[in-house]
Length: 142
Image (cartoon, rainbow, N blue to C red; front, side):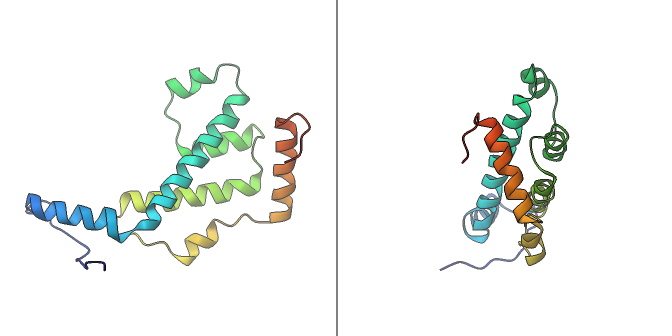
């Protein structure tokens, strides 16, 4: 059974034990969806980096020397033509959700945020992704 705790703690006066209990409660019991969001964000970021790198002659020069944000990678991937426009909004929505968790300890996923993840015009997006996969895999349709 989950142990309830208040949503705030005074970090300047909290004891080590209070911080430990607060941290364990927050990290282990309160937000299991944060793991899904972070893992999904990381997966999409790696895919974006891979697709971008495939279009570059020297990708290591870009990725090792610049600190590109997730949103910049989404825009660059779209500009390079490696992801369709329909996926940009969903990727940026996921980034906003990730930022909500990163900057607000009491963030709760809302229905509006879930709806923002939907890819608009799914049929067009699916066709675009099949076309990209076809090109990447040398004629094999997945």
